[in-house]
Amino acid sequence: MHEYTPAVEETVRKLAQLCVERLAAEPPLSGTAAWEQLESVAGKTITAAGLGGPEAVRLWAEVLAPACIAVDHPRYLSFIPGAPTKLAAAFDMLVSASSVYGGSWLEGAGAAFAENQALRWIADLAGLPETAGGTFVQGGTLGNLSALVAARESARRHRSGLPRRWAVCVTEETHSSVAYALRVVMDVDVVLVPGDERGRMTGTALRDAVDRLPPERRAGVFAVVATAGSTNLGIVDDIAGIGAVARDNGWWLHVDGAYGGAGLAAPAVRHLYDGIEQADSFIVDPHKWLFGPFDSCALLYRDPSLARTAHTQHAGYLEAVTADGEWNPSDYAVHLTRRARGLPLWFSLAAHGADAYREAVERSLATARAGAELIRRADHLDLLVEPDLTVLTFERIGWRPDDYTRWSSHLLDTQQAFVTPTRHRGRICTRLALVNPSTTLDDLRLVLDLMR
Ligand SMILES: *Cc1c(COP(=O)(O)O)cnc(C)c1O
Image (cartoon, rainbow, N blue to C red):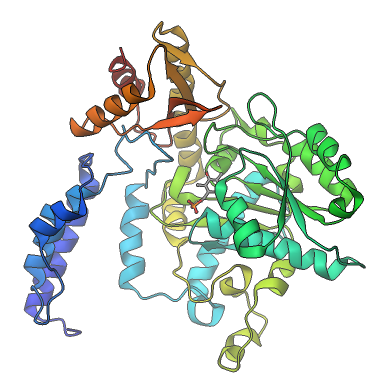
């Protein structure tokens, strides 16, 4: 099994060829399948004797891969798509083949050095100080959790009296992963700040909401989460205003830019993020709008030593890596063993340069702006929210929920697009999320015309 026999080599070469073919062509959108359907075709795949490489490859390529929707298809416009560069995806294969351990400097110095340079590029976009640093974690969910754990640990250490309950300020549009981290994992209360008509948190609303709290609850607030690109609507909170309130009160400012943080690279919208330089922590997912493969979240701290205090694990067998004071990526988040999941972004950035990233982000923004105009002008459609970034939320005038479901299934069944219904202010509507620079205005027109 571990020897490089001719049979193994044949399968390795076949897999490499499939990778090259997948990267060379526009992906088929593909679809989904019921468990029973896959079971009837694939059968039992794990057997005592093994199927052999060629048969396992065939099963994947002919049966299982077609039952996975390609997130990098230009008309995958649901949820938040992904659009890895060819070089990022290809480098990810090499990372796997190289068995790089990304947790400690001792074992993965070269990987940590490269990842830290990619993090530095992001820190510079946000205007964070030279001392800022962090690591890449699996996704925004773990990034938000790790940041909030560090925030609470910092409050525990720096405050004189401890409150009865800790609390964090958020809005209705704050991503579900934040409420999950706070309520389920950390057992921390949520203070809900009302958003404006687009769901945006402002400094004024934050101050008012906290002023209304009973003193005991107010004393428990240790952080506020500003969203830089809400997932549902693509709206950026008033980070500067929120930051000022956080500073006045000694709270930690966490900025969740899992989807929208990439917009920092685009001069056209950079002003929306004013104030982000005050963030104590910040996340952005390369697997969303920074053209990396799954799965990767860049997590940055203004003062990484506060995060290290919260997250370093201590054990006898780990002393060799923790004693020397080197930069160990494991020390900055909820993880220990880690894939060096920032490397695909680093490689692609190093090869293509930062300007190419700026241009690619700006292309999605320009397509989204043109798409919004298309919706505004169409007499069968109603744009529900003025977008800040690349999410377009709109209604087909006169449609009922069933009509959206039928239209959505038709698009996927006919391999034209993947768009799902959503809910806005209690009403079913739909949204297009754009992060793929290959998505064109014609792609959007096709989808919108099928709503006539
Ligand atoms: C996607 C998203 C998350 C969660 O990130 P995962 O990578 O899916 O864990 C958190 N916050 C925002 C704003 C997001 O868009």
